[in-house]
Image (cartoon, rainbow, N blue to C red):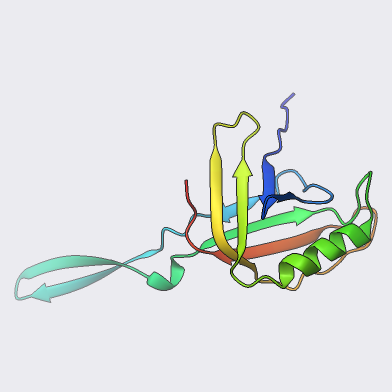
Length: 135
């Protein structure tokens, strides 16, 4: 049987009030998508690669629980309201349990208006975008 080990996720050095759901953490580093254009001069064909600068941003998504064993929906709602007001000032750090893998997503903003699913098995999706990730 496989053991699921959650990574530590901190937003502005603050842990998520109710943790997050396993297998919901996903991100893009912000290295940018490439486009390749073909040019031809007579019989000579050449490709010219370029980076689409509009895609050079990190993206981070996670699903959280609205309630936890030691907290309630109000704790998560206040947390979301607080981080939702921050424009480009959130720092998100992700560290593996063995401390060998670290990612930092600087200058992020919460880009979605999360649906607060206030039920026992409900989830809340938090989507962020910001500067390219630091490895």
